[in-house]
Each structure stands twice: as C-alpha cells, then as structure tokens.
Image (cartoon, rainbow, N blue to C red; front, side):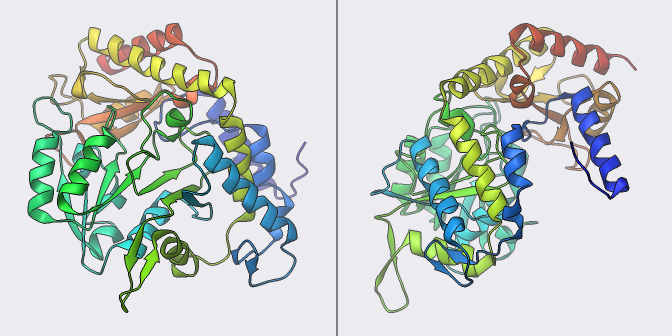
Length: 403
C-alpha cells in the first residue's frame, strides 16, 4: 500500500486508476501492464544515472545497470528468435518516435528521402510526415493504399520507389488493419536500392505470439514500441542486422549497428531510464510464455469479431476487416454522417474509450476526421473473448445511433 505524502498527486493517480478500471478501453495503442512491470518502473533504479552503454559508462556504480541492460537485450533477441551473432538490439530509446528518429539520423543523409505510408492512409507521424521532425529534416515521400481495396498496392509503390529512389523505406503503420507483406517490401527496396526499415510498434506483441507475420526475415532495421500489443512500459527497441554497413566520409564501411547506437547516445539522448529498461525486460519475459502466445491469438480473434459485428450492423469497416488488433471504422463517409470527434466523445460519455482517426480518402481534418480507430489488446488482457466483443459492438452501435 502506498504511503505517498503528496495527497494531490495521490488522489489524481487513484482517480486515473478508477477511470481505467471503469471503462472499456479500445485505444489500439494502449494495454494493461502487469504489477511486475509497474514495480520495476517504480524501483530504486530511477536513482541511477547510466550514461553510455554496458561496459562503457561515463559514471561509476553501474555494475548492476550493465547486467540489467544486457539481460534486456538478451531477452529482446530471444523473444523474436534472433541470433546475437546476426542481430544487434538497442534497448535505450525512450519511446517510439525518438527510436525512429535515431534510425534516420544514423542512416539517412541530410535531406535524403524517407518513403513511408501517408498519415491519412494509416502511417505514423515519424514515417516522414511534414509536421514531424522526420519530415522537416529529410525529404518525405509518401505512399497510400488503393482507393477501392484500401490495401497496399505494391505495383504502385514499386513504380513510385523506382522513380523517387528513397534512402529508406518504412514498412509499418499506426492505423492500417491488415497484414504487411514484408517480402514484397523487401523486393521494392532491392529494386530501388533502399534500406528497408520495419516499424512493428503496433503489432510487435502479435509477432512475438506468432499471430502476425514477422518482419525480421526481410528488414534491415526493425523498430518497435513496447507499450502496445507487447504489453510493456512506454519504451522502444531498435533491432538491426549486424552485417549491414554504409560508407563513412572517408569511404570506410561502418556498421548500421554502431551508427544507430551513436545516434541514440550521444546523438539524441543522455542517460537511459534504467527503471524503464528493467520494466521492458520484465515484459519481454512475460511475452515469451505460452500464455502470451494464446493471448496474442485471442487479440486477433477479438478484433475480427468486433469488425464483423459492426459491419453486420451497417458500419463501413475500412478495408473490409482486420488481420491484426485494430479496426478502422468509417463513421462519416459510409453514410452515417458522424464525425470522428463526435463519435469519440459520445462513446467516451458511455464509458467506451476510442480515438478519432483519419481514413483513406479523408475529406475532413485530423482534428475532426471521418473515422475512429478501435483496438482489442487492452480488453483482451482483461480476459474478454469473442462473446464479450460482440456485446461491445452492440454497445458501440447503440451509442452512435442514439442522438
């Protein structure tokens, strides 16, 4: 039991705990962590400054810091079946956006081209969007989905990539419900001479649980957050193939791994958050269990049921369904005439938490777009199964149809 003396903060934390407990959480990028993860986050590791990397710290007293970071790295590689002889992982990025920024800083020349999915079609801000640092410091090349199928069209992407010759192609999404064909992205990258980076932030837990295709066979670099389907703390990981190199200013080959490590520290960050790294290690161990594999499969089953049930009730589901944990619902253009903001607000009043979201062919603004994004990961953690998600679909339908 907490003995926090700051009663104002304690009260607000308690109110947030109560809010989380009393709502249906369908935020696709949120989950519910274990008590062990929270314990690691709130530990005395918060007190330690561990600037540098294992065995190469700038301060003393890092005997156990090194062991924690090394253990986290070992668990990250093991979870995804990666050989430490072939893959390197950096566990220090504070979150997904700085992790992606570090990759670009390391591997993309100034004003070089980053090719990523358009924001309105499901891409993330850090995949080269103009409002992000990734779109300000580098040249942005964006691809979308086919207007009819609302799925990725690789013939179009291939032609675009050959014409634009990007330095790096980002395969990943924040609001694309279908599986990503990493093999085809590899072929496109090879055809135009680009580095292939996979951002698996949303589906990393599904990859770990064998419920979604793995990018590791095809990508040169893989980034991920830990706090979505992987069910860990707010943090990020960068995986990189050890044999990948680029030439430095003198024409000497330098490994991607060393360039990325230097971009994280000292390029973008100072001392790592050791408590966060320990919590990531806890989450990675939890994700290596048979129970987590079962969980990942259930996440996808639940999302499919949610999409199917809403479609039966007349809601237009972007791309016609889902292969992952998230579902994109057209609340405006599908004939219902409800803006994403209004839909989100009405659902929140009814105790269902979603987020407003742009959809392909967007005619409105990101502030009040044409759809909402829902996800099944958090409620699946709470034990909900198909029958429960049928009820959730009924409730969503009832709330949105009632003025």
